[in-house]
Length: 153
Image 1 (cartoon, one colour):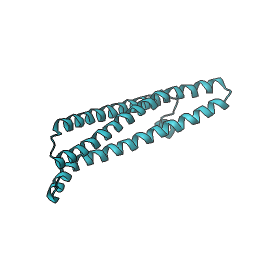
Image 2 (cartoon, one colour):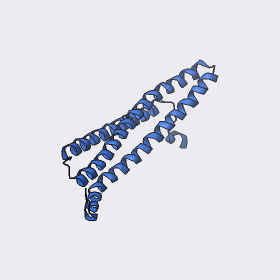
Image 3 (cartoon, helix red, strand yellow):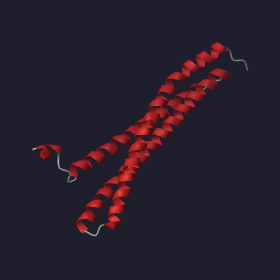
Image 4 (cartoon, one colour):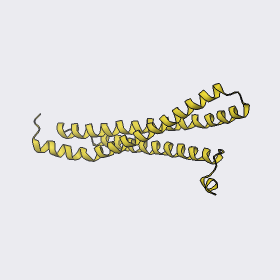
């Protein structure tokens, strides 16, 4: 197996676009894990308050908020799973591009399937993120938070 410098340059050129995609997916994973961390932190605070509160009305309110956080955490977990699957598939595409070109092996069908799988995983991750955001904003509207306009008046 003899690889020329020009061949390596060509291989790297093929791999650059998926690397940018991988960077974007990594950024998305950062956002998702931050959202999951906030949900987890909030649920821990609410659970602690629930243990120490004796007022039934307050307990019901705390439990209601906790009940809205659990589905959100599950949605974010699913988004993380699909986004991670996307990142793994993109990394597989990059490695396959490099190996296929370096070893003169036709991996085009495998690369196409891996890339399509990565895109479907990314779409599913974004769908779960969107669902979680919609649930989060929906609970804001149902909560007893006073709108800013009323405070300013």
